[in-house]
Length: 165
Image 1 (tube, rainbow, N blue to C red):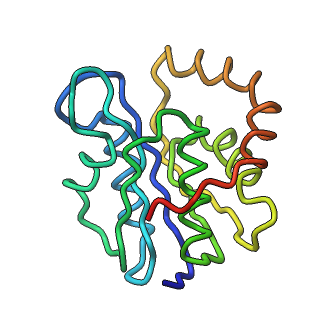
Image 2: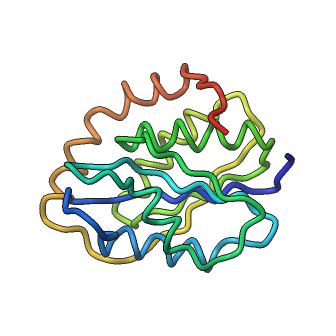
């Protein structure tokens, strides 16, 4: 399948069970506004805690937007995992653009890692961001995660995961 765009929605959870976290729901609503009928939409995120339902599955149940195809990445446990899945999806559908949907406070780091994961492809990266403020723990975690970006860029750029779709 050849697609003009992959719209990759990064999950978010605080480990609570059962429903989409408000931050994840905001990202999903943003993706619904962004997605076009011919896009491939990737919903990404794992099942935290004892819950058997992944963030990707919870988003799929709530999806009300357009898409030619919806892919679920139930195994992505981190931003690096999210972008590896997005890069694999982009390669598998020969996308010219990957629209990364996440929070404004998370977007710069996620985009840097996605660009590294797409190195060598012709896909470009654009951001579609939500504007909710980060929870205090997320703000601290995001600042700490920036310390690992140089290593993660190298890992993302060298990984060529097989297509999961």
